[in-house]
Image (cartoon, rainbow, N blue to C red; front, side, top):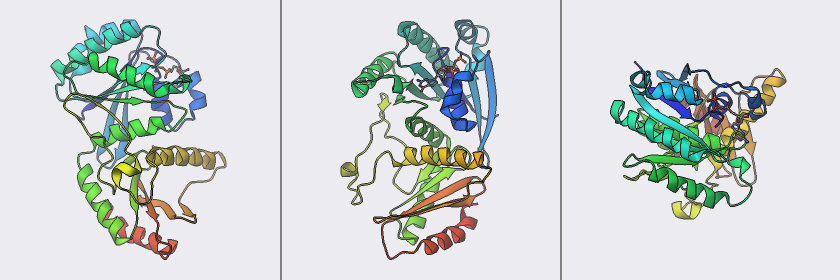
Length: 315
Ligand code: GTP
């Protein structure tokens, strides 16, 4: 049986909304119409060939939480690969939220000790000032409540690219051959003289892998908060924007949505800008590839031919 991805957190923290934006391609503005989740909604999301996410969206009302932690304890917490726990940044009941979180973590340690834990401090768009310090403070609270369990924390909102960053990292952690994919993308990038090559999943447009070292954050033994590497840190001569992956995901998703409203199908995109050329095209039946080239002598058509020639290798 496929390992589960548990999506948990208090009622109204935004679990179903993020699921509908990422996996059902609904615009964020429509999420206010979603009703509360009753008990657990199980979804099998086919992601990449054999990779299927067995996503369990657990309704967060107290009566359901109590039942997950008592009668349904073994059913819910067994065979979990990833726990994603969502906290509303503006929650007025943070101590109760943390109590439920600690209880869930205890059950997880017992039934699925190897599960990876991601914590999302959600609805960050509601924070007007001091986003950074507030996220830092919340992260510290969460770490203090996580004991020895390593955690990765993200600040997220359905209204910007931060949601794509978090979910891309989550999905990346679930891909068994991510390192092999990165290696092949590196070879391909070198063959095309590309600065960078990025692989996206077709429906969600989440980033699966890139030709750069790793799309996943460094993990420390005692819990991790993701910090963006700046181009100075990476010694990158092209000053690539550290938020480029998630911003591309968000923009293309919005563009695809506009295409579908015009009853058109999104196929590919070429951008020829003064500094660089970028080509986004289908690679396999489940993926899109983006090739970014800073060498002005390389023609877009040549990049496209290379993508066509690489298809068979990646299928
Ligand atoms: P249960 O199903 O009861 O467990 O709740 P849930 O966690 O699934 O919450 P849901 O997704 O239904 O979201 C509750 C409300 O939060 C909706 O009105 C969403 O529009 C809103 N919401 C979700 N994400 C965000 C966000 O990032 N920012 C803001 N401002 N509102 C959000």
